[in-house]
Image 1: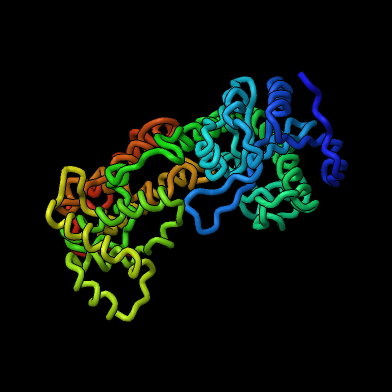
Image 2 (image 1 turned 90 degrees about the horizontal axis):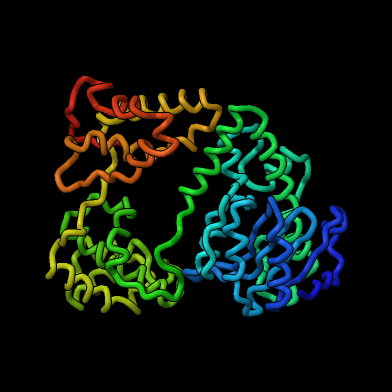
Length: 426
């Protein structure tokens, strides 16, 4: 296998840390890099990308650092990036990333799996909280390693070639300091039995949080794939059921359109336009005049108005199907006390375990759990989502919270009453 040639440009941060840097832009060099990386026990992974006005990000660079050598892999060179799969899935090698969700989305987009075992240094901060001023890589490196790093190139043009000297230094610095931070945190989370338990939870959470996607870019999408997207448009909860059914149709259409044309949702049409079309039930072309006279500038009305009218008419003709359900409204006021009790219990458990309460359960998870436990008392047509309830009652969270969390979430546990009243909390 041919030897790699060192990158011929001086990169200050690499010199400072005695790191060899290689620019990978052909299949032979990529194969050589992979053969070198196969023996690593810890790798730092990062990407640089641009996402301006598009639905999908444009991958511009992949950085991999093994503690001695930094590989800058150029996706613009039309490499078969899926050959990195063996590295991503190597069980004997921990892959360190920071706030990995966007990077993993990009990996999935180009056909790569979620790296495993995955150590996310942002998650690690929640499982072993410190006094760092924020959870960004810059703040954590500053606190834990006493090193100040520059993030000034984050929004620069990463698709340009050649990359500037500042960009190269930034890209290499990111993985060098990520590697150092991960090594430090892995060490501190291995000091005693309690730390080792939290480290195991950190790995388990990463595995649960970043699942393999059902479909990747360039796949064939249909509106039925996004039949539930409207449920996230919580401001529309007050719309009557027929209007919510229209919103379901319009939101699903926009999701397909955004993916097929690789355009950001808001550049097609914004949420406000979809909700106005649904609220007013604009099912005939002349109804568009009413929308124009509202005095608000709706993005997408001129181009997509006739399409939205046709979709509205279709939804009204078909009526609600089996997949339709009402958007979950804000919690009734009578639920507020039980939510406070659940939050207090979660804070108590988190303090006992030495983890941040927000990693155990966020506000949305708590509210969904309370709704699910008290689903017999919520308005007709509103379906309590069981996803967050399952998340809090199973896996490592279930081990810590069950069975107490169920009893504490019951309305009668806080008020002695199952009456929900008519008000809602904001």
